[in-house]
Amino acid sequence: MEKDAIINTGLRGITVASTRISDVRGKAGKLIYRGYPIRDLAEKSGFEEIVHLLLYESLPSAARLEKLKNELKTARSLPDAVIRALETCPADARPMDILQAGVALMAPHDPDLQDESREATLRMGIRLIARMATLVAAWERIRNGKQPLEPDPGLDHAANFLYMLSGKRPDEETAGCFDTALVLHAEHSFNASTFSARQVASTKAHIYSAVTAALGSLSGPLHGGANVRVMRMLEQIGTPEKVEAYVENILDQGRKIMGLGHAVYKTDDPRALILAPMARRMAEKAGETKWFEMARLLEQKGKQAFKARKGTDIFVNVDFYSAVLYNAMAIPVDLFTPLFAISRIAGWTAHVLEERFAEAAPKPMLYRPESEYIGHYCGPDECSFVPLEKR
Ligand code: COA
Image (cartoon, rainbow, N blue to C red; front, side):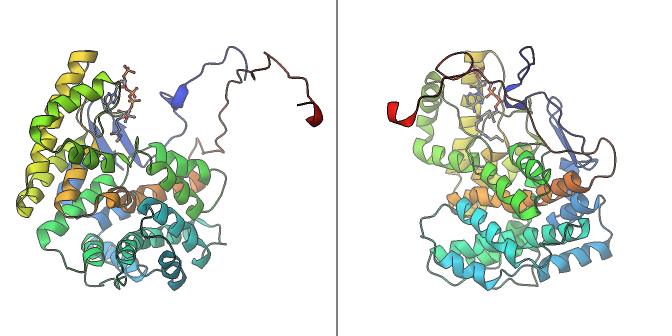
């Protein structure tokens, strides 16, 4: 790298591509999927409509929606070989590792893998959207010594996932809440996992490679893994009277409170504003509001303590109340990040399509950033080679 080049650690503030898929307006607290504000989409549409919007660039007609739902339903079942492979994994494996490995394993079973066309990539994306949910549900059953369930073609995507997970068909309110959670997690511009997917797609690797990379990125606690950490944190705190001391202690140690802060939003995360009342509703329905109330208190105390120390505001992000919501729905904590993934696959697919096949200028190109070489410990420039026998 040239000596006077500017370093932007973590690519903050650098625009690396143009996109028509979504926009995160950090100061205004807005999230837009292909022109539509997230609040409208969350209130008025379902996950399959969002898949259509992201993949086909428009909201579907009733007939188009029916067609897409049928395509997804037809694609739900996993190849037998994938199920057999899951059965060989240790029951305490991390579900995100299983999902990542399972997606890689699905690749050679996809009849379109060798086809490099846009249409084939779209078909593979639809299979991934349908099957990642089946895979997560199948793993939950396998690790508990149960047989994976066949998908129910009478149920839409959200309800079918909950059914395959628990064996019980969810009531309308529960399925509706989960469907909205899927809508809210489906897309979020150039976050870490989406950028990972696009970066791999920019090499012209196939969509399964791009998605396995994205899954690795999503698993991290600073990204999708935060929802698991939020719930573990609440469990660790244990009771409301310990919240304030916990917050003070974490901030005194210079550590982070999970579920707070965002790289782009500098005001309320619009998704958290929708998730919080849903989490309350589901907690009340389950007859256990303790975690929701503790989360509310933690939000309040965390914000106050952060402001007192840094002089600036901090806000809860999507992972904060989604954790409380999923917990109220009796979903095992270590599945929270896979739940994020089974929705975000819609956005990843849209981004892979855009990265690989966008027609409009500026066209995407292979990502290849620079780094600043700051020298090895032997000196500023080149080290003199020491033969093996003299080291
Ligand atoms: N708890 C305590 N302090 C926090 C914090 C949190 N959750 N999030 C940010 N901060 C502090 C940082 O320590 C930093 O302090 P400093 O300026 O004294 O060094 C300051 O706020 C700015 O933080 P920074 O890490 O630069 O913000 P960012 O915008 O780059 O980071 C996250 C965004 C998401 C990585 C960060 O907020 C975080 O780690 N949050 C917790 C994990 C999480 O919930 N992730 C899910 C994101 S959707």
